[in-house]
Image (tube, rainbow, N blue to C red; front, side, top):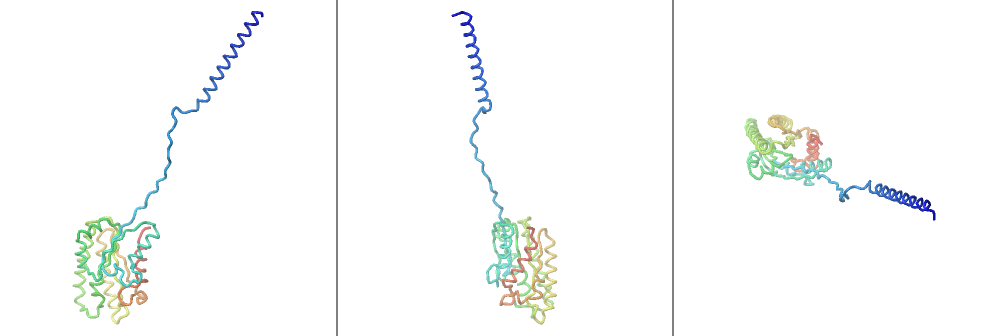
Length: 258
């Protein structure tokens, strides 16, 4: 065989071999060019659902705080809690410290108790009803009251009320306090108009005491019972019935910022 032919075949074979090696290298380079230097670790995506903050409510006062006369047992406190749950979907923690027949002097002593102060301290909202037993003497009415007795009774009541608010603000400066005013359950009596005048004055002075403190809101209820009082009273003609308590709860709820 001619040496030139052999040389040609050899050179051609070497060239094809070089081209194949170059192509192989390029292919390998392209294959690994897009690979990361390290294989990423498997990650788990989780969704965190924030739990809604609950609302802590402390209720203080007399039989209206206890809900006496409400056939459902809720009273205005229970109705208000139902309203808040419906509107906000928040969990409610309630501590009801109301005492049937309690007067302002007794509430004054109650708010000085360490356990009661502990409950008030952690409250977001405080509900208060007091004064009805001071003025009405447990539902006996005002028929036998001497005109000169009322200013003395009211002065003691206002002093006690101011002390109660001072104690609440001393242990908790942030909670909103709703103080429920008085209505006139005796409006249909012969002295009904005179009693109404007296209660309006009593409520005015109570509201003035409330206004001396931040975030203490006086809640009027006199007008709710004025026109149809018997429709909203329990059989004892003193405490509200289920409808009456519902009216009070709606009035308080109307003052809340949802």
